[in-house]
Length: 564
Ligand code: BGC
Image (cartoon, rainbow, N blue to C red; front, side, top):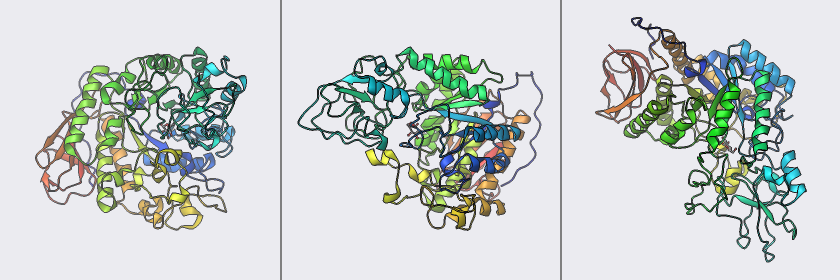
């Protein structure tokens, strides 16, 4: 790894200063797995406060925190009962306020997760809707649809009353209002009051039965969420990550989906719930609200669509950012990266917003494992991280990515993900508590109090070999590489080698050498083939692993090049 001083470039016309988020790198914290302040085996706000200096020392610009609001935790907090409070499992509102001010004092912005597609079946408004009965205005806040009851089978465990477990046992004889599938597997409908002859309503849940979908065609839902946004923005929260942002509106009349075809992907493969045009009005309204605050608040969307459709959510009056999901689906394949990179660039040129890069999050198999696992996977994951941080646009790093943590094969009996329970896919392997110390005591330093209960997900043996403690002592570690890359990135922005107008021009050179030319001064190169390749001309500012040969780039290494 080499970090050399950056050559100054000639001054041209003075461009307006970019907004902070255009150059930002945000660190995603999954609070229950980050640090456990009270020793109960579940990460919390006290743990995060204690570990803020670690995040600040990485050199990132902010933190995105996944949900910590009150919730029965059917989907680890993505099933919210009160959008404007803190679940006692994670701490108190006073602790959140202290976290916010401490983070700000360290120069870190705080983004929260807002979950507007659905709430918990224990949310008071959903409970009121169930109690108020069919046809009531309370039920119009959600998607309740009447359907005949099949009296031959009363085995429907997927219901509002049984939803706390998030489970659903579909009764083949009981036919729901349409053929929509839940993203987590199984049908997307459960009975409001199972077995009742008078309440024959079903309710819609694109995820588990414990997560009823809001009816965004009812203006009261929009008003309710305005209040949620204001609550957090008034507190000084810097922005929001918007969960399942492209699915809030369902096609009028809730028609059958033409494309379920046995695919256990209730969202992307269902055009009746994905990317309905009306949803853009929500983000226009939210952008206006976000810009009533100084500094303007940031909106970043989980818009899991192909680049051209996703980019429409970042038009000038909608969100500022949407994750470049197309990238997380790619293997170690230069041609595929270049093709998707150019698609994202075409979308940027059309709609103006640079891609927002992310290779990992709490829902995705860790990149070490996706890129081949073991030593090979971890070398590639380092290279991918270096590449990511040099690309034009903002970037998000998921906790543990800086340690190149692999996906963990969580023992079946310890798995808690509702997606696993309903559909067979398990996301727990990317959510195992972080290893802070080499030594296994106190759950490898995850638990900070005097005693430590078993962590909510078991850590595998040898977890300490990836620990922060060990990597801090190793100059060649992924952790130190991440810090170096972030520091250099900051200098490049400062020296205007990186600018907000940069766009990626992607190509593949012989030997599967992936190149992304960021601008006339700078390019990223990743050797994705099996043989060493010719290094592009220029000065190597950074490499994922030390260069082994003058003028050549070894397989699975990545470099930042200041072009000659
Ligand atoms: C979140 C998942 C969650 C789902 C339902 C996703 O986008 O990232 O963790 O299960 O939304 O809220």
